[in-house]
Image (cartoon, rainbow, N blue to C red; front, side, top):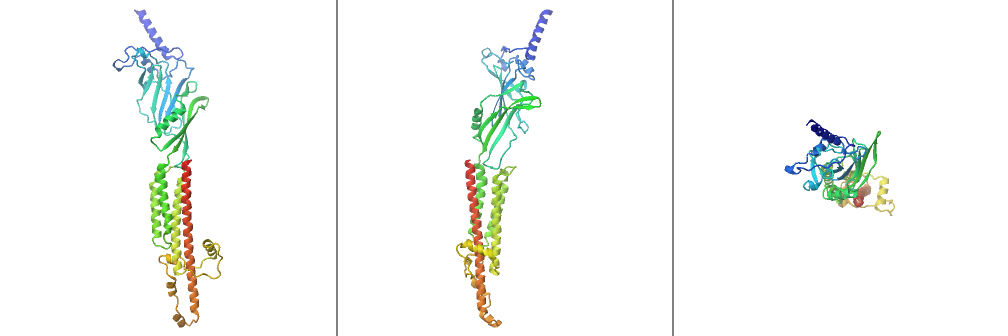
Amino acid sequence: MDRSWFRRERLYFFLVLSLLLPGRGSTFTINCTGFGQNGKYMTALDSVFERKAFRPAINFSIPTIVNISFTVSAILDVVWDNPFISWNPEECEGISKISVATKNLWLPDIFITEFMDVDKTPKGLKAFISNEGRIRYKKPMKVVSICNLNIFYFPFDQQNCTLTFSSFLYTVEYISLGMENEVWEIAHTSQDIIQTHGEWELLGINKATPKKSVGTNLYDQIIFYVAIRRRPKFYIMNLLVPSSFLVTIDAFSFYLPAGSKDRAPFKITLLLGYNVFLLMMNDLLPASGTPLISVYFALCLSLMVLSLLETIFISYLLDLAITQPPPMPRWLHFLLLHCTSPRTCCPAVPQKRNTGLDHLPGMKEPMELAGKLPGPRETKLNGCPGSTRAQQEDKAQKQHLVSLWVQFSHMMDTLLFCLYLIFLATSIVTVIILWNT
């Protein structure tokens, strides 16, 4: 009795040591006796579960090959072989795959170097084990990674991000990383998933397999280069189109008379509306950097402010020209003549023109201005013979000055209106080029 017990005890310990000491044991086949009854697994797997802290390898000098696959929808697929697990499906009621809680298995410590958030993967996930000992572990995770974004061309930007898969503990002597699927298969699967939702479009995925050296240790890693492009339709409809409409309305406000009392309030209302629009759409813009669309908004706002200031200046200038027209500087007079009639030389005698006077609300007529001048009777009373002719010349001079200032206001409106048109045309062409490229 004692000898038989001793033999059984020695046999038991030999089996356990063959499992716990890699390099001295060999692959064994699990006995399926009682497997599948009452939903129970074979008890022989308990020995494998107990050694989950050790890398499953018959010989530690041979590295464990861990195959990696993923989709951009944040599902990490890791596959490796456990040589201590195998069974014959014919002897196990045809079962060739089982699911096991991951807490009972050795898991490779594969992590993403660019990962910057807390891992929110659900607990208690299962891993699938085939009858050949191949373990497949799918880990759904949301990767918040470091990516050098170039947002200058937002919302027409293209980004190149990297995902680096590596082991934290095991060097190349213990873990060798490989690919479960080809890169084009990963890209094709990811495109089918991404094309139905999200603001990004996947352009392509490339890979590289450089070794990472940390001190004297060498780690295997796989780097995936993910090229994505933003879908700009949402931002065009919500940012560019409303902004262009407001600027266009402000440009057509130049058709209002320069001296109209409604022109300045109209422009102020548009300017306030544009500022409210910018505040509402601020959340859609990138939080960091200065994209080209921000420059566009700044130029739109600058044009509207410049237009309002020009309207205020013109209103003040025309009001001053009605009451007491100031003399026009010679350089401005020369510029005005060349802008309005480039082929006409500067006249020696001021021309008597009333151009533009009838179009200005509130503008007093020349006859009304002349009515304020002293008449012939007042001239006689004042004892100034011949002053009537001088008063007529003074009246004509004032009329000419008023006409010049009115032409100057029209010239400023025309120049600013042309600037609006050039800006809008340039913006449209730029959007078309960026969208197509």
